[in-house]
Structure formats: C-alpha cells, structure tokens
Amino acid sequence: MMVEEIGEAAIYEGISEEASELASAAAKMGRILRGDNPAGISKSECESRVITELTHLLMYCCDICLFPNNVIAKDTLNRFNKRIYDKKNSHEHA
Image (cartoon, rainbow, N blue to C red; front, side, top):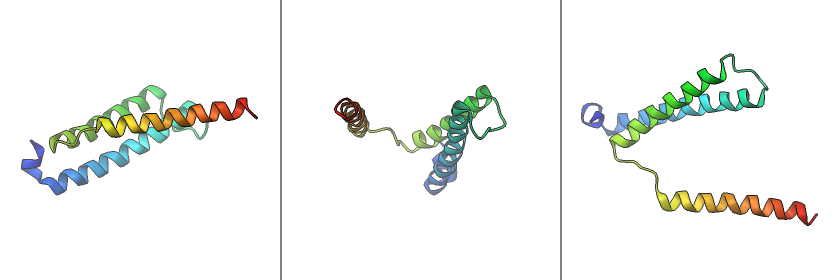
C-alpha cells in the first residue's frame, strides 16, 4: 500500500493534486464538447486524460479506504432529479 511508504499526509496531498488535474482535464473536455475556447487536443486524447486522472485519484482514495457513500450519492441524485422535475414543471406552467 502506498500509505505505508509515503504516509497519510502525502496521500491526501496526492488526492488534492489528482483532483486538480482531473478538474482541469474535465474542463477541457467541456470546452471540446461545446466547441468553444478550443483546448488544443482531440476529444479522444482529452478523454484519455480524464480517465488517467480519475484513475490516479481513485488509487489514492482506495489506498486509504475512502469510498463513495451510497446515502450521499442517493440524496444528491434525488436533489438533481427534483431540480429537473421542478424546471420542467415551471416551463409547462409559464
């Protein structure tokens, strides 16, 4: 396990670094998909970068047993679905 070699603090720092790199790659993908502010790389290359950074992030998280919480995920999805439902209903009644 990485934590035994580099310590817990370094793992959290790695999580921070990889999350930042994932955010950057995801933002580039958004620009590619919208077709604005070109990112200078292909969609395929950008997707590969997103997958790479996500993999690095998850490796650090798994190493210290950080996993998604199903209750939080369900609550988040429910809130998202409610916003979509409310938005659709507000347009129908306008």
